[in-house]
Amino acid sequence: MKKLLTKYAELIIKIGVNLQQDEELVINAPITNAEFVRIIAEEAYKAGSKKVTVLWNDEKLSKIKYIYEDISTLTDIPKWVIESREYVVDKKAAYIAIISSDPEIFADIDPDKLSAASKASRQALRRFMNASMTNEIKWNLVATPNPAWAKMIRPDLSEKEAIKHLWTLITKAMRLDKEDSVSAWKKHQERLKAVSKTLNDLKIKTLKYKNSIGTDFSIDLPKGYFFTAASEISKDGVEFTANMPTEEVFTAPHRLSANGKVVASMPLFYNGNRVEDFWFIFKDGKVVDYDAKVGKDILTKLLNTDDGARHLGEVALVEYDSPIQNLNTLFYNTLFDENASCHLALGRAYPCIEGAEKLNEEEQLTAGLNSSLEHVDFMIGTKNLDIIAIDYNGKQTQIFKNGNFVI
Image (tube, rainbow, N blue to C red; front, side, top):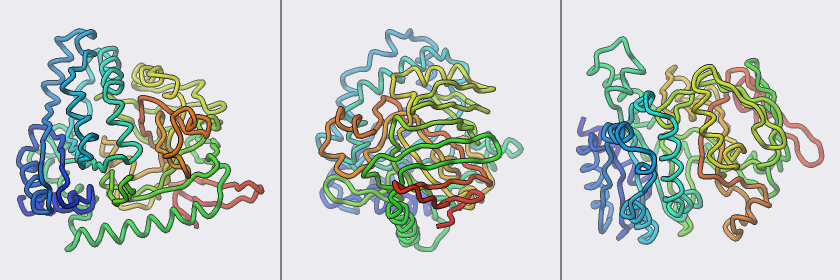
């Protein structure tokens, strides 16, 4: 296992945050990942980091706090918590977040508490979140197994075997089964970049989606849009990979343009709660109706976070015939499930338009980029999803047929 963890850590350091000489690193990790964090820290120092800082978290303790504290306490974000994240921005440190959560750990917690605490945290950490969304800092999100998550995926196995199985899936999704994972990732990145270039060259005005489960939907892209994929470039000009694994190419839509019905193809896990069999109806960019067989109250809390939570901030394209989809596994984890399916995101937009870095928030809104405390991905891809791109001259190009790219 140590050999696998070391290989994983090397990939995170070299491809994830692409750590530079004398750069600081901050790791946010569950206490259950102590061994892995030590290995990442050592790989960071070997790569030239001058300082590694770790911020520990414990979701079981968080649940205890949700049970016993009231909303006024839960929403009182300590100054030291805010400063710990703003330290990353001030130092221009690289930031790694390791997730290893029980997908339904907060299922029996008062949703009002969850919603209020989540909103307060996002407001308090807005400077850090803005720095992440605009690539002011290099960041990377990865995952490791835990018993609850592993057993949710394979309830028929013993805890030990379920964890072993989930490690096998993660190993394949992260290309850790390749002899040279770093080279394999670079090759993968180049392929996705080529797809992005093709989509950018089409000068798309509108995307139209349709499939057999009820999605019949259109959305415009803002002028100057660009698709990006696999890796990103920090404001300092250094390439990094924010989400690992990743199989998507994505851009920002125009926040006022979505029209029609979108039906989710996978469950959503939000604030430790499941939302299942849900749909949205959009008019002029805004959610005007919605429903869910499971978790409608959770959707309501999400949509009422702020005005921007009812608008879309991301359009992501993922082939149905993709490495993660071909694992034939519902991961119950957005990091993996979003890379097995085309998806959209409610909330804040990544600034994927030319010159966005020169615009303030009001100017970005005018240009069509959405603003919100939220950014929540939900999956809509199916094996018969068709997508047509329409340019400013009315020319139509089918870019997706039966769930896969045809460009």
